[in-house]
Amino acid sequence: MKNVRLMTAFAAAAFMVAGTTTPTVVTAAELTTAHVKEAVPPGFKVMISELEGPIYTLTDGRPVYQWPRKELRNGGSGDVRTSMSACEDTKNTLNEGFMSPYPAGLELPDLDRRPTCIESWPPVMAPADAKPVGKWTLIPRRDKSKQWAYDGFVLYTAKIDVGREPGVPLGGTRGAGRGGDGPVARIPIGPPADIPGQFIIDRGDAGHQLALVGGVFVYTFDKDGPNKSNCDAVCELEFHPVLAPQIGVQAREDWSIIERSPGVKQWAYRKKPLYTYAEDPGPGYQEGVDVKGWNIVFTQKAPAPPKSFTYQDTPAGVVLADAKGHAVYAYNCGDDAMDQLSCDHPDTPQQYRYAVCGGGDPLRCAKNFPYIVATKDDKAPNKTWTIVEIDPATGKYPTAGSQSLRVWAFRDRPVYTFYKDEPGTVLAGAWGEFYGARNGYRSFWIRQEFNGR
Image 1 (cartoon, helix red, strand yellow):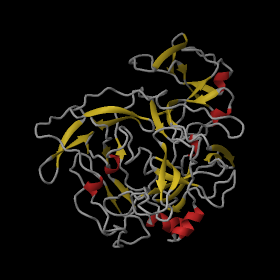
Image 2 (tube, rainbow, N blue to C red; image 1 turned 60 degrees about the vertical axis):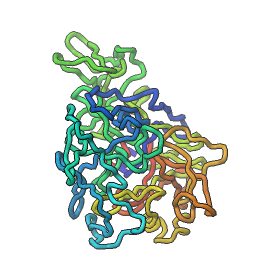
Image 3 (tube, rainbow, N blue to C red; image 1 turned 135 degrees about the vertical axis):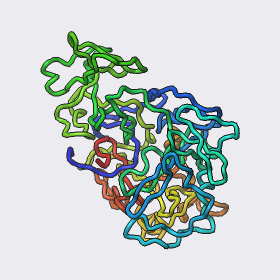
Image 4 (cartoon, rainbow, N blue to C red; image 1 turned 180 degrees about the vertical axis):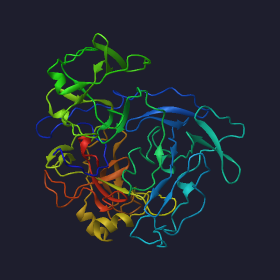
């Protein structure tokens, strides 16, 4: 399975093979990415999201987002750095034709209920006496009022977050819009991770994982002690110590430096020495976890899925599955209008989903991709995996007199199985337009190296 590369859209909590080992689940509260303590203007604060890690919010807990410009196949959308907002109070009625082969000028669905960009994404306005602070600046809107910006990009809140749990960014995710064919995503912002310059954090399906600049993952060894390496000369042939600079290293939270031998320094994270694996073919691979006693390094693991869910081994890797062993799928959607509004939530038009899962027929769609029903005794394990009520006839929230089905949801979006799947198969991964990047279904893979690389 080392050469498989599949599109995914999930944050899982483990990487062990199903049926043989129970995956280790660690919540965000137990393991949270340390962040740089930046100055912030009045009205903002840092909160810890169990999926995104440290994020900036308003004082009432509503997350704040950016919409960085992205070039698509036939043009681009989003905000340009240090420029005024491209999100305006104008209702878009036609698609833009950004994504071939669809031409521009097609009428968008549900126009009577379609919001404007700023109705969905209210700008974060600054008071008249506001002053820039560090990365926080002020950029004028067309009416001359001032909008807050962070690191050059103007900020928004999300209508979907109003009245919801504080510090839970339902409007967008930093894992959104992967691949060149994905929509121009809104992204929750947060302070930089407090890590040395040799490292990056890969925000993937299993959680936040440490890698070297360039994308090569690092490992820890079960036999090492606190700030002590027990990887000997033979061990080093397979697992290479990640060496630290001899001078100019600053102390920081969670990080330490050990001396392997006189004058040879090695990085340690949370007192565990770090290594790379010689047999990893390149960036994005994690084959070192197949060696007993070696582990990928998480700065923050993803929230645990429902207890009734299982982990199934497939020819393409370990996949999240329901209680019957059928692969679980999330639905992803962004429309092709100038404002790139999402269409993957029960509050948004369902026509896109019906088109890819049932040829426009809701009944066929419900047969092909049935909801994963929660039992009356099921309870949400966290703020990311929850239970919602859905009218299966419309795909929306129930209204008076309509049907109501209690289903599992990831980030407030229902999840599904595929009618042709059996335990151990994943037949609908990347099902839809542009391999599911713009409109379609993606499997929930456990091991990070199956993340579309």
